[in-house]
Amino acid sequence: MWIGWIEFDILLGDVQSLKEKRAFVRPLLAEVKRRFDVSVAEVGDHEQYRRTQVGAGLVAADRAHLVAVLTAVERFVAARPEIELLSARQRELHSED
Image (cartoon, rainbow, N blue to C red; front, side):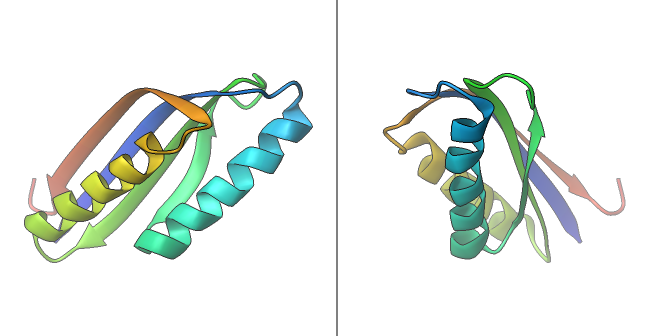
């Protein structure tokens, strides 16, 4: 069994309040979850209105599938024109590690 996750450090565009931030982040999380069938959450920078950290994770039977899904999630997030992806960190672990 393979377990993998990816974390994104994101700079949001024209956001002036935490309410505007939530209005942007919630649909992003819902779309990532719907499109890729992964667990996803805002995992950091909760009090900063122009920054957020988002994490996505999944469990897969083989490493190739795991890497393919996480790479697709990264491409999807990076392609969003209203954000600037500052960094992405990805990790995979086998259950016997």
